[in-house]
Amino acid sequence: MPFANATSEGLPMGQLLRLSLFQVSVGMATVLLLGTLNRVMIVELSVPASVVAAMIALPVLVAPFRALLGHRSDTHRSAIGWKRIPYLWFGSLWQMGGLAVMPFALLVLSGQQSTGPAWAGEVLAGIAFLMTGLGLHMTQTAGLALATDRADEETRPRVVALLYVMFLLGMGVSALVIGWLLTDFTPLTLIRVVQGAAVVGIVLNLVALWRQEKIRPMSRAERAAPRPRFRDAWADLVAGGQAGRLLAVVFIGTMGFTMQDVLLEPYGGEILHLPVAATTVLTALWAGGALLGFLIAGHRLARGSDPYRLAATGLLAGIVAFSAVIFAAPMGSHPAFFAGAALIGFGAGLFAVATLTAAMVLPAKGTAGHGLALGAWGAAQATAAGLAIALGGGLRDVVNSIATSGSWGAALNTPATGYSFVYHIEIGLLFLTLAALGRLARHASPPEAINGPAQAKAPIGLAEFPT
Image (tube, rainbow, N blue to C red; front, side, top):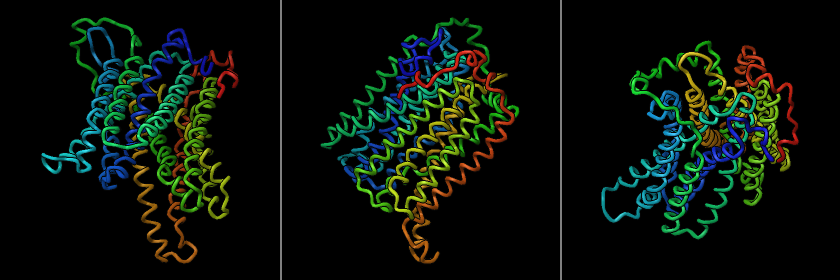
């Protein structure tokens, strides 16, 4: 069975698979926010692209607060002693509430409004996107922290890989289902599909959190005791510099991998003259590469590999991938382009799982807990991804407008110049991340300290992770 060795005495297979459903819910909400509703607003509802971009950017504003959400779940006080479940539950409610009101807000935003102020659509849609973004960030932070609490040191890398595979599956399956349901678009269909996704999301999260955290009764005095301050916990986390360097690596590396998110398919169509059917294959290739990266990362980390060295392998794969994408245009090579797209996913998968595993073992002293470390990792990754996507599209437009005006000479007077400029910046960012990672790896603990000595006795074969 895939990821059979991700189980442990404290986290058996049934409970692990149930817990991983929160990633499916988050993946579905991510697809709605960044993909489906983006297209629906621009094409079917004729909302200006600038307004759509602002709405999609709103959930990114919540991302920096993931560290605070994680810290609050570390120090939450309740009569029954739950820490993660309340944040999973309220995150699910925020996510469901945002999606429940979103289709009505979008219809008002598109001009289908008979009463009320003209700005009501923008305000209501902004609130809906913020609610959904807050919910998915809170749910994912608390869910990852709960998985870390329950997994032991030996199985933690495989648990991380499984959770990322479930996130990827959630995005892929929900994108296909929601796209199919919205084929014959009507306002009523939009309401049914988005609100149906809200119901499915909260049901998945309810199944995921059911009996996942033990009841540990707390006395009145324990509940009344002052909680550690976020400032003190953050100081404990970054003491020694290792956490700060890891977060910088995550931020810069994520920017290096994600600036191409809005450019790869247009590059294939505009520069390589690929048909729409061919460019849609890019998403599958990227997802397949990412899945392979997750599987290999789980396998290697479980055998005691250093997560920082594995992250470096992902960065090198990304450098090769972007080089292939760049050379595909002058060579007119479609295979090089498709291979580059798959390698981008592979490198990003290795990098994400390796750095998340490293973040899981950061809290070593003081008041810093798993929730704070994982929240900080998620904040760095999500914020970097949002900024990178915005910068990627903006830089391509600016560079292309200059290059095609003839200001840089005839050799660069081509639409490929803007794309190539962004891809070269991404290669530069990945090299910069490698440099930062080098110092981190030199100060890292040996693999046995991260993954546990037991793994050296029982190596895990690739056959245990069938694709």
